[in-house]
Length: 161
Image (cartoon, rainbow, N blue to C red; front, side, top):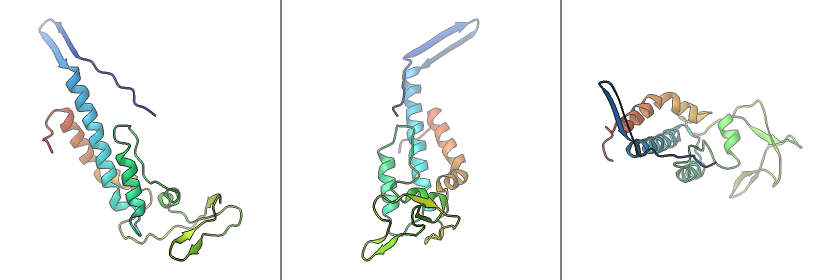
């Protein structure tokens, strides 16, 4: 999905003693920076809440999010395991009702083409800070910080990093 962007070069109006003028290009640039900052903060702040065994899941998610900056979209997880990790549900093969086979040196894997179904059993994450719906957890913990930084950028008070 591509973003629709428009730019207002400038706007001036006067009515009685009130005069309004703003630079639309500057405002548009600030808005774009604020959205990019929100994206970067959200992507970074959810990492501590994500499950980690080897770090590959986090790194794939981080890489995917870096490619999405400016799109208005963020990935909470990438790959075939993202759905069941985010929902905190043990998944089984829908046809057999069995879990994945363990392949030595590789780890647990379902048969190629298997359709998965969620069970009612929750997962046990190996990292103590991990929790289901980690984007929502990050948002609950850091929303005020996100909004304050976006407001500072829109107000032109954000210091250069």
